[in-house]
Image 1 (tube, rainbow, N blue to C red):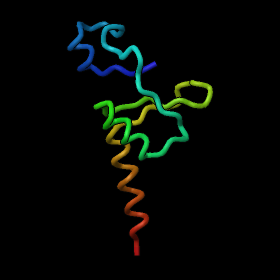
Image 2: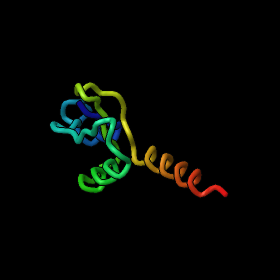
Image 3: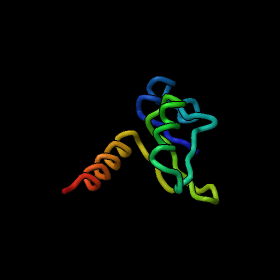
Length: 80
């Protein structure tokens, strides 16, 4: 389970099996935004696959998604 971008494919000859990570970093859907950011920084990645408790893919979260979510949360918390 993982993800592949067009840039990955171009850089690695166009084959998905060559471009995808053998052991992708996964997060469970109950984990926090802090966990997401921590994993992104630790592994130098900007996109993570999200799984449920059974290991099924339920979504993908990107650095941009995280920025929007935190911006919205911050704005709500700081309203007069």
